[in-house]
Image 1 (tube, rainbow, N blue to C red):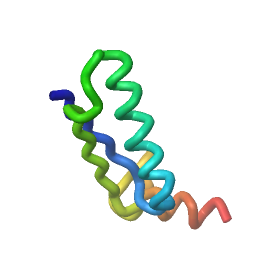
Image 2 (cartoon, helix red, strand yellow):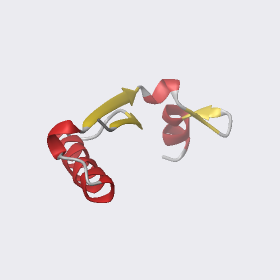
Image 3 (cartoon, helix red, strand yellow):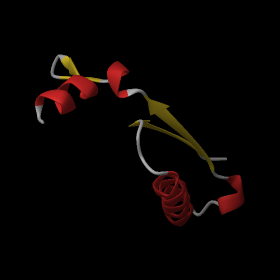
Image 4 (cartoon, rainbow, N blue to C red):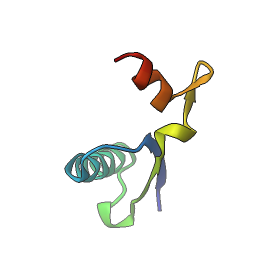
Length: 66
């Protein structure tokens, strides 16, 4: 049973997350030959204040790019 963990920054539309889950499931099924019913996806959203890039949170970087 394939289990895929995906971590993304919060803020995306629910429809985009559903699309991501669907397309990752399809890809894993195609590549591994696993039935879609056996594939599990865990999508974890992290607050942008808790995700750092180059020493700054994503929130701070977005704030400064305005």
